[in-house]
Amino acid sequence: MVEYKVRDASLAAKGRLQVEWAEMHMPVLMSIRERFSREKPLKGVRIAASLHVTKETAVLVKTLAAGGAEVYLAPSNPLSTQDDVAAALVEEGIHVYAWKGMSVREYYNAIGFAISSEPHITLDDGGDVAGTLHKLALGISDESTKYALETAGVRDYVKLVKSVLGGTEETTTGVIRFRAMERDGKLMYPIIAVNDSYTKYLFDNRYGTGQSTWDGVIRATNVLVAGKVVVVAGYGWVGRGVAMRARGLGARRVIVTEVNPIRALEAVFDGFEVMPMSEAAELGDIFITATGDIRVIGLEHMLKMKNGAVLANTGHFNVEIDVEALEKNSISKREIRPFVVEYTLTNGRKVYLLAEGRLVNLSVAEGHPSEVMDMSFSNQALASEYILRNAGRLQPRVYRLPQEIDEEIARLKLASMGIKIDTLTEEQARYISSWESGT
Image (cartoon, rainbow, N blue to C red; front, side, top):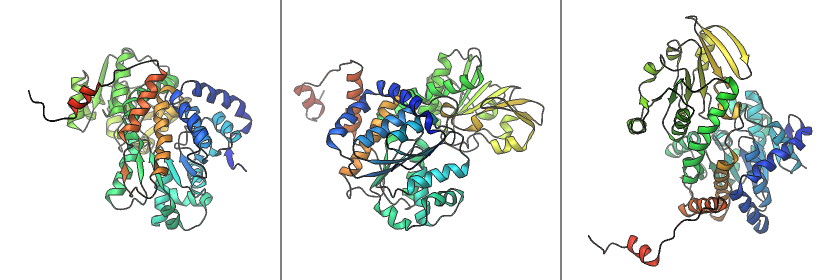
């Protein structure tokens, strides 16, 4: 019997069409599904997943199910669920607990629902399933564990954690957290850092987020980017993509703020202006945060901004813009458009916050294009298989997927695009693997 809680099960027919559209644009993952259907490498495995419930995620989840897995799916953001897709997945036999616009309590109820499956593998986009499960095992009591317990139930969480074979994580933010847990000796089972695969971060983070972030900003505001001054906080792979697309959309100036001197220097060499946020705050028309850190845009910055400045975040958590300070220090607040809230500051100037400071590309738009998620979710599927094949051999550490898996995904993607590449001759292979040849 399928356990589920979605907004409207009658939306399934519409959701099926969306999933079919994604499947048409995800050939690598579909080829993996074909093999999984034959080999059933995940037979008998329970997977607890916290992922954005989108049409692309549906293709991944259906692939895992084709491989024999029983999947319990929770969202990884309260605003990112596509309700029609959630309904369609229920019809596919997936246990789903998700709808767009969840409260904090409902969100962690969903995480608890996934944990209640007593999983063999966890799949994360932001670390909430594995993170909450670890907190429960460590006896940490906070808002997340309190609400998760309402659906997960009381059980021996130390024993449960020890029975988990491994997990995956596909965000920069999540990987940072799991590495911190490993450093502190708190990580209790192996985590595959899917985000560290080249076929993930070089494409998903840069091209996927770069395009989908601007899709979200434009859908929410319908502002013209050409002629504007855009400020991008952070020049990791996400920030690179956002800045590159801002330039392509005709932004008059693109300013990057950074704390890492190497990334700042790279931004300069890429042709962008670099300065502290305290200076950029006075210049920008549109601000987009992409750092994964807290209070990157604070009240002191907002008070310096032009009247009408637009604020958006594309980092995983809604902590990069100090929304709490904005709420406390505004004369008035009103929703002027869907996902656009106007705040009148104490100095009389207005700023516009998009999507409550949450992921603008998934809260307002549809997230990354299917073509780029094809590679990201192929990594997720193959990471699940890798965990099973290496069960008992992996330590409670954060691992990268082997390079040969990364390269195989790239080869499959190239083949799906009709692109051929060279191969080394025997002589060339010997030459680059030897040391005897001199100048």
